[in-house]
Image (cartoon, rainbow, N blue to C red):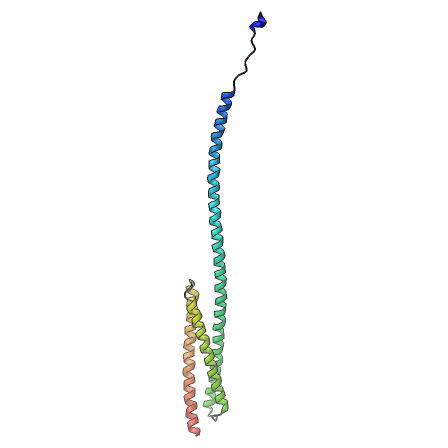
Length: 182
């Protein structure tokens, strides 16, 4: 009778507890997934922004290198103009000395005058090329170096005007000497 009275014990029902636990995990996983998704979107936006800045930096470096190349060319041409001005000044000094010494008007003076004339033409062409180059640079955003180039060209232009005036004076003196010789 006692054995009949003993009933098998029922196992506790954990289904409700497991369902509640799974529901809590699902909520937490949904929140974390949303957070990770938002962080991933933000990381991709930042990556795209960084890539854009890297492209822009590359373009600016290429533009800077192009500018440096052009500046080197302009500096080289300006130096050539300066060297030719010096040579032209020396020729004019020699011509002045020849005229002052009262040498006979002959082929030597004519050759020097022709040499001065050829150098003046070459110098004038280079100044025109430099002026065209400066005009092209003015469209760029680098205004400060261009101001220096423009100043150099102005100085060279003034020097050319002075040399031209000296040449004109020498030609007049040469013409006067030639008239006296005749």
